[in-house]
Length: 302
Image 1 (cartoon, rainbow, N blue to C red):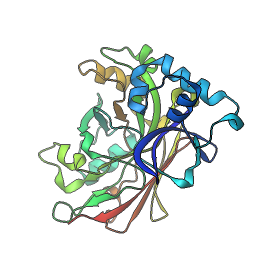
Image 2 (image 1 turned 30 degrees about the horizontal axis):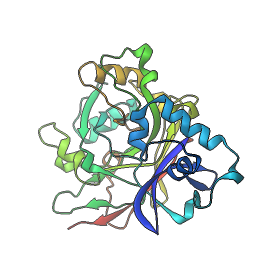
Image 3 (image 1 turned 180 degrees about the vertical axis):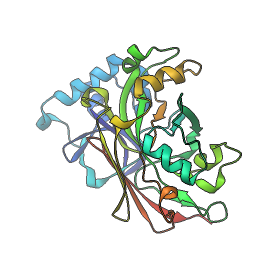
């Protein structure tokens, strides 16, 4: 399932939907029409577990021509929001070899690849949806940067999970653009640099895990104003998804809907010669194979 959260012009209430072709299918309305109970938002659907998720699949498996009026709308007629608001976003730094090298040149990080995952957090208030603005506050930063990352959405409570069992805890995958104010790193701490409002564009959809044959073989691409800045593949992660889940859950409980942003390939603005950074008016597009494109404008927030 390709799951989204969206609104329509007639109401501001967010709807839980599934993308089918070029349409958004309102799962809540479809469930009500069938007399079936289904959580009304994506976070609740994830938390409800496999039975609720199978109900959603069964609803979508029915004859498309038999769906009640109002349950299906063209995607062009809806506003897609961030899929959900995670309880926590765990970021992973320096998780691609070439990014380790470019960061050591431009950001004074260690030249040697890390021996354990480098972790940081983004608050839920940083999360913003597709099409929403990335806020450029020139009083706080002149070095606003991009990072296209595969987002792993946790499906059930995970604590002290082994690498062998880690994929059993994955609900699905999405895209995070790990926006970073490079000149707001503080004594090696990245929270303010990466955690300001709008610094976690997320979406446009969550693709359930059964739809991805191999999450460790997905192309990543990021463009600014149509110009390619990043090209990579998740096969080049230093620490793969099972290792990340095992490492994080060794001391931090991961809960349904939590997001792991698995790190960025090379091609960030700080690593370019000369460095390039985002400015108001830019359009940033992060694309991951099979998942989609997350596009956001940069706006002046002063």
